[in-house]
Picture (cartoon, rainbow, N blue to C red):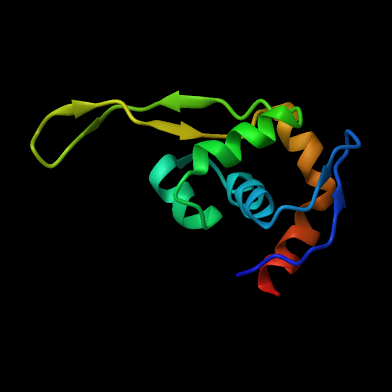
Length: 104
């Protein structure tokens, strides 16, 4: 699932060429994703860094806490990343190109 080295220009003029960032944005297009799942999707054991780099490019990418009960019965509030409406506007022109890129 390697994205090529092509550079994509988003609606706000930002450029994205990093395969991890492309996989992250494509995945978030489908809905909120937790950090552990994002590690697997991005291909990085440090997806918060991928998110931080995208935020420096002007994305909001909030991390909203959700309530879960772990296997020991304890309540936890892990976060899920999601695209805001303005994030979606930036990404939308490239989403089909991203899909083609990750298919290789």
